[in-house]
Image 1: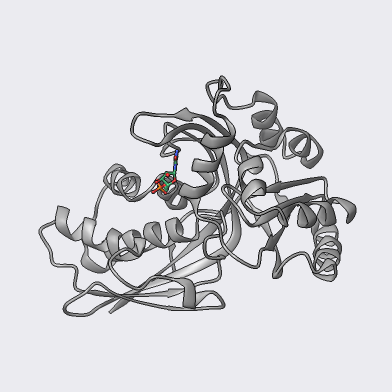
Image 2 (image 1 turned 90 degrees about the horizontal axis):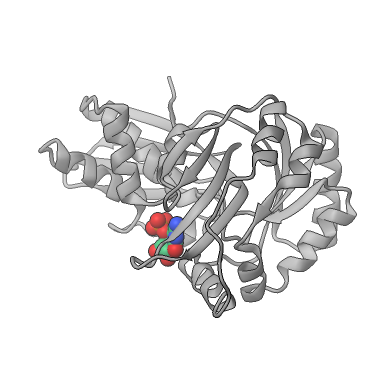
Length: 299
Ligand code: C5P
């Protein structure tokens, strides 16, 4: 028997970052939007697991050992329920790896939901969210999807209302960026500067609720962008190419290096995607819209 779970990528429409905490993490006001680029994780009963395999354009960069968040999710659920994690997890990967779109977190949430269905553990939503938060700051959002404000280190979620569909173009870079390295660079750039408490933007929350792309474009922000650009200066050219192509807003997605371009509609997405591809400032270009649901078992 197998269970397959489909799970979306995310873009951060606001990422407000506070000063480093004593535990090394940063308090955030992190507004997530789930977008329609998906990984699929299939869990199949298999003795001696968890075993992880992966296919897709970036598969070679995905760790297949116990550090993979899908494997860690299976182990965490099994341990809580006194089971052994006898499972093969296959990841069909379409979300860019190390791209700032929560690809690894998505696989953790998907594996958790898949194993819960495969093993009949019937974990409550709260238990699943607890395990997700143990696995990583972005994993709870991959479970719930839609749009949400994440506070704390990003794991404490409040769902947000969204009044329409937002269209995006994503430009994948030639290499990845390490999230801890980007946060370290944020700390370095902020040395000696008073860093305010991170606060969600009411204008941005209103723009999401109205489903208005112009209002959203006027209020998106990412405090990690200067750090990502400092570590990866070529990203400035991708941002400029998207702006020149008429994107309403251009920003680094999360810790990067994927760049995200908000556009008015599907035809603008296709036009902007072509212009970005022709600009040769990135590896590949994808279009996607959101919000979309979080980790979902496929029939
Ligand atoms: O939570 P997660 O394991 O995904 O975080 C990866 C790394 O990103 C952390 O080890 C930390 O360096 C950084 N991080 C942070 N503050 C957050 C979330 C992540 O400093 N709120």
